[in-house]
Every structure is written in structure tokens, then in C-alpha cells.
Length: 221
Image (cartoon, rainbow, N blue to C red; front, side, top):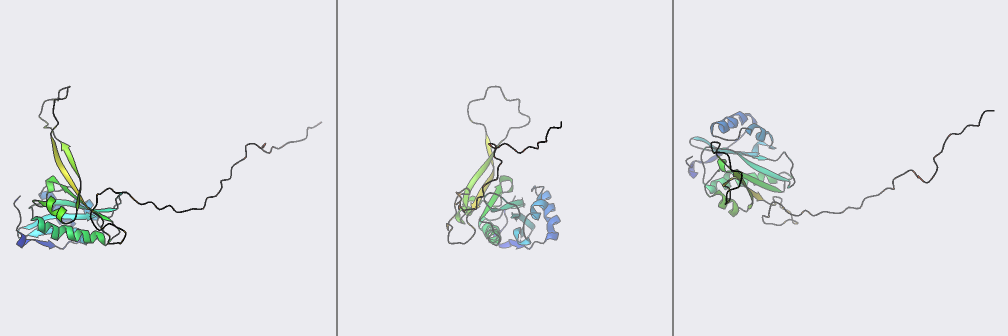
């Protein structure tokens, strides 16, 4: 995966009719196989980022903001990478406009998901931290070759081999309001709860102490 030169990189405008082209690009470059679904989950064409060089599309990503989550965040998802680009260009061409796109809606954070198989740039982690994002968490996978013999009943000493597969970064907050901290914070944070008085009505219940009414008839002589 040779890197692309910064002088040749540019963002290509995206339109919904280009979804098949992006899906084909993903299939040809080992990208995700549900690109069409993610492209449908962005609120506008401006949330899709197609970065190209002189050889064609270098990478594609999209902002998913038509779903709901506890953090009320938009998620930047990598779709496919043919060639890595300089980290500074990834920030300029993808991260900064993605944050601006998410800020136009009602989202308070932008989460950037970076699978190791779709790594967009060398030293991208340092660049994301320098751009104001905070490292949220990593996902690790434990891999074992299918041809390996069955594991013994007793665990072997030492730790199993783990491979980091996904890194998550978070930009919080997105909204420029006076009551929010003007710096990135962790993805999970306390939520202020406002107690609002409500009108309480007394429920109507049957009084079991009273004898319920019954129908009586006079005896017939």
C-alpha cells in the first residue's frame, strides 16, 4: 500500500448516484462489504469523503449521523483505503470537514473509528491527538491459527497473544456553546440531570375495607 503524495491529493465531490462506484472501490481494495448501508446512514452528500490522487481514489470514509447512541455522537467510518495519505492531509481533507459536517446537526461529539486493516495514514494517532481528539479506547482480538492443534486443558503460563484491531478517537464537544468545556474530554462523561416538578394525581383505588354492594331479592313465600 504505497503512500500518496500530498501534492496530488484532493477531495472528490460525492453524489448519491456514486454509491455503486464507492461500493466497487471497497470490494476491489479490501474495504467493508456494507458500504452501501453506511452511505445511506449519512444525512447528506457532504458527509461522504472521497480522497483521490493521480491514480484514482485513495480512500473513502463517511459520517454516520442518522443513528442514535448514548453519546449523541456522529461516527466517522472508514470504508476502504487503497493508499495511505500523509497524516496532515487526512486531518485537513477528512477530519476537519467531518467535524464541521457533524456540527451542523445536533450531535455533540464526533467519534473516529480506525480499524487496523483500514489505517488511513502513518502516524495518524499522533495527528488526531494534535487536532484536539482524545483517545477513547482500543479493541483487541485474540487470534489463533485454524491449523494449530487443540489447546491443552490446562492453561499455559503467560498471556495469550492479542492484536489491536480497532482504535477509537473522540472529539467532544462539537457544539460551540458557553456551558460546555472548550477542550476534548473522554467519550464517557457524566450527564447533568435536571429535575422538573410534575403534577402528581392520586390514583383511584377500591377500598377493600368496605363491603362491596350486592343485589338482594325478597324470598318468595
